[in-house]
Each structure stands twice: as structure tokens, then as C-alpha cells.
Image: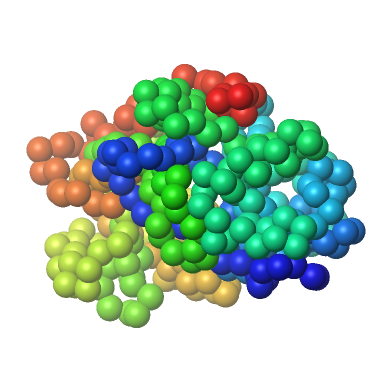
Amino acid sequence: MDQPIDLPVSPMLAKPLQRLPDQPCAFEPKWDGYRCVVARDGDELHLGSRNGKDLLRYFPEMVEPLLATLPPRCVVDGELVVPVDGRLDFDALGQRIHPAESRVTMLAEATPASYVVFDLLALDDAALLDVPFERRREALEEVAAAGFAAPVHLAPATRDRDEALEWFERFEGAGLDGLIVKPLADLYVPGKRTQGKLKHVRTADCVVAGYRVHKDGRGVGSLLLGLNDDQGRLQHVGVAASFTAKRRAELVDELAPLELDEVSDHPWASWAEAEAHADGAMPGAPNRWSGSGDRDHRWVPLRPERVAEVRYTWATAGRFRGTTKMQRWRPDREPASCSTAQLAEPEHVPLAEVLAAGA
């Protein structure tokens, strides 16, 4: 593929912010999808993931719309997303990465993707990496006006801080999880965290019902978290991780008195025995009694008697999205009082409203 910049491109990244900066910036909704740099040269397309792998085989339905809407020779940066019932669905997106071609074809029809473009890296013979974002955005808007159509969309952007904060609160209801902050003078620096991201931060009190050993074989790698549903059943809702080496060792000692010798005594015993959960979606099979598979999902069951406060940014369908971080133990909380009601979801907002914002 002939392009004025080297491919594949490692996408520009963002670092966490506590508040919006004072410098002149553009603010965009933070999309909950797969980062994807698309390069087009005539009829040739490359959909590069964050680590440079080609995503085209997993999203064949994007070939026709990308060829129909993008300029004949360009490189753009954006996000592949899957809308379901008018909002983003990351779980449905994750299912699109499948080795079987027949399933890829089926899912391309059942849960088709969209592509949201938010940066222009090259156009015709011009490389734009060394061009300030303000000018790249202007050029991208001209390209979008000339040809973008669903399922290829231009990401909304605003320079108004009040409008951005309104988006931050409202658009969570469409499946978005914050704001991306782009200084207007910034060049495009592949792989560097020079942009910013403002994400929702919440806490929940969860039952610690097990743990996985760290990948180095020493200490606690992650805590398995549970919350009680409306029927009082303890449901697995995610994990807490990112501990220091010292803290991983300390947790082993703190949790040792709670370890169970028999998985049959655990509320998640049926999950541990069910082959249906061998993909690791639930803590259990394969476990330390039935270890198998390429990934190690073995876990140590604990009596569900301790409660930890965890920090998280996003929850859907009663589960945490991504890894949470433990804040502290809560000896004042009873496990039975920790319910999924803590994970209230925001009011639904149609994705179409997000895409129309800032027009």
C-alpha cells in the first residue's frame, strides 16, 4: 500500500485527567470500541488495530462503506463500535473477534459495526502527522462533508467546555464512558499519551469471593468480586487487580483464613463445574481442580465473608467493564448488604443523538 506515512500506525493515546485543562482544546466523546487506523489506497484497505494487526477479516461488512465514503488515498484514525438497540454494546463487539469464518459472517449480519472517525493522518500525497490537530480536524470535517455516510461517521467535537461537560454526563447513557481532550496545537505522535481522557469514577462495595494467583506465580493477581442479585444470589461481577508486588504478597496472608478446600462449598460451585464457562467469563472452569486450555483461569475460592470497596468507571448488565481497583477493606459492611443495585445505569440516550451533537 502506497501512503505518505509509514504503516502500521501506532495510535496516539490519552492519559487520565482529573479535570478539563485550561489550554485551548477540542473535546470529543470517548467511544467504547476498538481503536482502528484505516488506510485506503484505491480498492485496498487496511484496518489496523492498536497493536497493528489487521481487523478487516473480522469486520467484512465495513469494506463497502469504507470504500464508498473515504477518499481514494488516505489514512484516518477512529473507533470500531457495535450499536445494539440504539447504544454501544462492547460485549457484542467483543464477540466479533472469532476464528471461524462462518461465525464472523453470521455476526457481521446480526451485529454490524460502525466506524467513527476522529482524526486524519494522511490525505493524497500529504502526511499530516506534523500538522496541528486544529488543522487536521478542519481537513477531516471537509472530507466528512464530502462523503461520510452511515455506518461511517464523523466524531462530534466541541471547544465549549460547558457543552463538553454536558456531553460527559448525558452521553454515558448511550454507552460512552467519558471525554477525550485534544489540545488544538498538538501534533500526531504515534504511541504517545499526549492527549487526555476524563472518565467517570465510581465506587461500589463488593464481596471478595476468590482470587487468581499473579502470572508470575507469586501473590494475588486479581480478586474475584461478587454482588447479590434481587434473589440474594451472589453473582460474579468482575475483578480487582493492578496491585504492587508487596500488596500481592500481603493479600495472600490476609485471605488465607478464608480459603476453601472444596469448591462444592462455594456459591459459584456450579460455575466451576460447568464446561460452558471454560472461556473464563465466569470464575471457574478451568479452575485448580480442572485446569486446561491455553489461558490459565484457575482460581482459589474463598468464603464470601469479606467486603472491599472498589473503584470503577463503567458497568453494564450488572457487571463491571474492565478492571476495577481496590480502595480498602470494609469491615463495617455485611456481604449480604452488597447488591447489584449499586451499579445503577444512566438514563438511556440514543446513539443517534451523540452522533448529531456538535453539528
